[in-house]
Structures are given as structure tokens and as C-alpha cells.
Image (cartoon, rainbow, N blue to C red):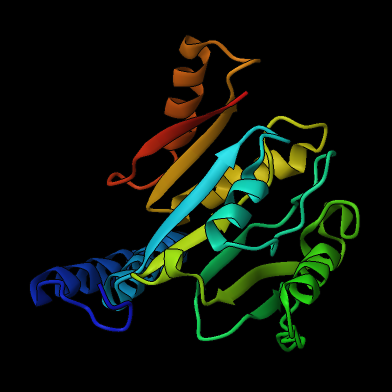
Length: 219
């Protein structure tokens, strides 16, 4: 599907817009739910599909995403690294946009190649350079010309679950409501199939009702 062209029935979009309006009219306490419906409507209109890569810390999430993109764009390390969810969507050239919680202007630094892009991300989305998100980063979006993103797929790198940084787990769990599906990575050497299924069910339940959950074993 062309991400710029929606083929969804008008009635579905109209129903979502009507529902969002009704929820918002219930009062300010319902604004977050209405905002999520508006976000879903936006993705429906643009034909995008948000796929989050989840897993415990150091299971190779960023490494897998780099493999899908065809180059080392996302920083990776032998210690718990990713602290801020990072969206990667299709674009004609590499670009990164960083939004902040305090409302300051977005940063759009120059990234002439994958190494420069990885360096910018390392300064903003890693626990080492931005501990407990002291920089106040709200959102990071990367544009990349990878064929893996050509049909509206938006890949999302998330903080690892279960490390000593409890706020990273909380960030990922809160972010799940914005995803349409989740790919959950586990280590075959450390977790039993029964435990793996339990983890997949626990975190997959945080995605939307239409979400799915898959596993990839890493030995």
C-alpha cells in the first residue's frame, strides 16, 4: 500500500472520527483516550502500520532493526542502551527529527550518512548519553530509504524490558498503546518456551486489539 494513499472505507474513518469526538466530549479526563483514537485515525488515513520490536534488555532489538534497514543506523551495545522509543519510517533520504517535552523547536540535525545518524541517535536516545531522559526528549523519528519501509511499515525500536533501569520498562509499556503489532525477541538459551509464550502474551496484550506477537530465537 502506498503510505500516502488511503484505501480504507470512508465509513470506518468517519466512525473513528465520530467516536473520538464523543470520547473527547466526555471531559478532559478522557482527552488521552481521544488523542489515541485521533492517532489511530491518522495512521488509517496514511496507510501506516506501526510494528514495535520488544524484548528484555540486550536481546538484539537494535541489531535486528539495523539488519532490516541494511546498515547500522541504530546504536547498539553490550550494556542496556536504548532509553527512548525511536520510530523509523520511509523517506527519500536519511533524516532524523527530535521533539522535546518542553515545547522547544524540533531539532533536525544534518545526517549525511548512517554513521552520522547513529551518532545523533546515541546522543539522544541512549541511557548512557541521556540518563533517565534528562534531555527531555519526547519523540524521535527517523526517515530512511530502506525497502523494508516501502509499504507504510513504521519500525519502532524500544527500550529493553527488565534491566536495572526500571523507567525504561515503564516507557516501553506505556508506548505499547501506540503500536499495531509487536515482534518480541527472546534468547532461546535463557528462556523456556513456556516462559517465552507468557512474556509474549503479557506484552502483546498492551498493543491494540488488532495486534499480533511473534518470537525470534537468538542462540
